[in-house]
Length: 279
Image (cartoon, rainbow, N blue to C red; front, side, top):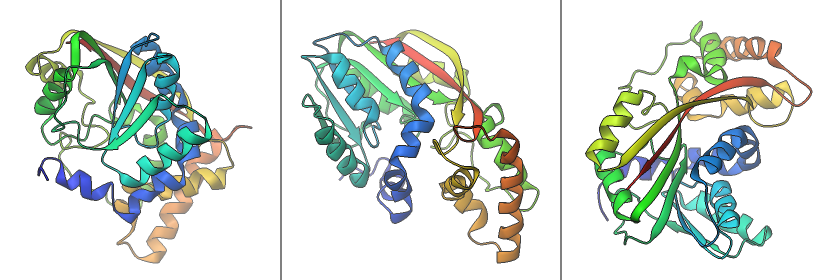
């Protein structure tokens, strides 16, 4: 097995990553505005073949398959558990022109068979982004399209900044390289331009897209707090801390989210980049 992205492969197949499977409905509700914006940007036509990179539980893959009509959609991800859930949902929803495979888009030996490659927050985790996007480009037909949505910087994202600032009053943040694989690795548009140019992708467009989002999906304040505390970032900040300190940090998060409670759930802003290009 290729060693590329091995740390990511291990992470997305550990028990802690099952949060994404167990909370699949909440994640889909929370991220729905960005999936819709992505699919609008991709402009998938009937008969096209679509590649969904880092497809997770497959909500965007199934939507792409529906848009492709008599075409098809392939979802690729490292997480066996999420792919299992994706297949279950495809059967439940009777989406027949979709398939899912456990593989790494950075190293998978693609043939130039896809009309469009899409990703909703799945492309920021590559060890070598230039190699990954070069490989994805190789999977596109001549003139094929890419459409990805990625997070802007953390401070532009209320859904992370508001509870994060409350937690930081009590615990130290995890230290890491902002350019390392992770949710905010593509926050700098200039870095995205450099990567896409090196990968041979052209006609690049990077557009800001922001929308209110339901933190943890529809539910109560307690649901939103529980959801946030089970994310990887929260575990990294809290798990090794004394119980009393954890309790204070959790109370602070709850207090910070309280003003944002609506009838549907906790509503906070999300800020992204919509990235499109051609092969």
